[in-house]
Amino acid sequence: MNLSDTTRIDPAALAAAFPSDFRWGVATSAAQIEGAAFEDGKGASIWDAFCRQPGRIKDGSNIDVACDHYHRFRDDVALMKDLGLDCYRFSFAWPRVQPLGQGAWNEAGFGFYDRLIDSLLEAGIQPHATLYHWDLPQALDEGLGGWLSRDVVGHFATYAAEVARRFGDRLASIATHNEPWCTATLGYETAQFAPGHTSRAESLQVAHHLMLSHGAAVQAMRAVCKTRLGIVLNHTPSFPATPNEADRRAARIDDGLNVRWYMDPIFRGAYPADALAYVGADAPRVQDGDLALIRQPLDFLGINFYTRSLFDADGKTVPGPGKRGFTDMGWEIVPEVFAQHLVRLAREYNPPPMFITENGMANADRVVDGRVPDEARISYLSSHLQALAAAMSLGADVRGYFYWSLLDNFEWNSGYDKRFGLVHVDYATQARLLKDSAHWYRDFVARHRAGR
Image (cartoon, rainbow, N blue to C red; front, side, top):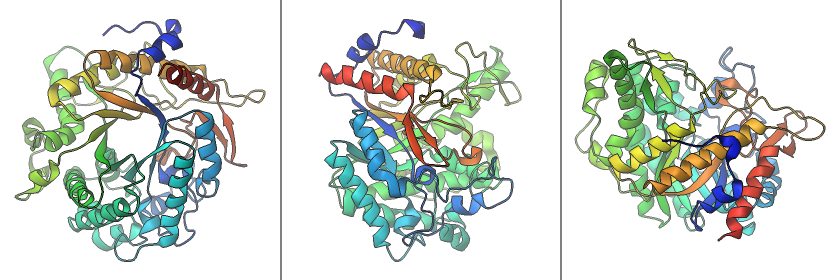
């Protein structure tokens, strides 16, 4: 798909390319911004524990304070209102509302989200919630083995139903999980994320339990609320490094373990046969009825997109050519792949309406004379919006876009070194400063709104 040079993108024409009811927002997650890690009855999460293990976080930091959003959420909502946003995607911290992951609820924790949701609605911003963005209650990890235990599925469904019962009438949507691939693969196979295990067999069993918990949660929430329900998947499309068959085979296997491992059970009721054959004895234990439970009808599908992967014959990733450059994470910038992939999903799976629930870039931002000149992020944003418009013109049913992220924040095992935000955060003072990209996004959203 040919996308024009980003220097020639006309913001007004680009804004006009989206339908009048398209929605614009930003996204965050609880562990990355809230702070208040042990205040008002909140229990420890696996990330609270992981941060305290020497060598796990590259800059030695933790999430005790993060962006202090717990105390500053009204200011952050005011920032979103100033940007003219339609919607905001955030996550509940399970251990904040249920410290042990089972048993008693923490009313102080629910009170925080009650105030946040009210503030958003008062500002005219639709709240979109995610139930699980990786911060499992540490008590479930210590007592049951975390997501390795099938028992966690039931606890998650109970938690989901309680959130939906309390807030479903005020939430525009609820996603069960954010990026289960990251939870399973980075948390249980590569040890990059909490809880830090290194077993492919564990990772695949965890992936199955996550999918089970998704299905069980959707069932439980359907019984108590009528809001839109879905899941958020991260897709990193896989490509062969060269045209030879061995490279192509390696890319296809990665596609099976990355994209199809989650899409197929949700929309086709089965795990991909080629991926199952590849993992052999490491395949998960699947009980009768599991796949039927996973395959719940959904109201939306969230897609997170950042980059692609290139594979050689040995199944190892190799650097891409980087014709458009790389982000500060080292990720190749490939908006054309974004467009191609959305069209692929539409044609192969016929999913419910999609939302781009995350898309953004880490950039080595610096404050210069009272502003943050981040032209690279503006180029990234505009080129990916152009790609999104192209995909929609070819049949991808996408209803909204959430930039990742509102704020610079804790970037998991990278600590605070990587900055994804539209808003610069001075972690020493917690001062917020709109970057040039935030001004660009505000103007773009205003252009679109003016044409509604």
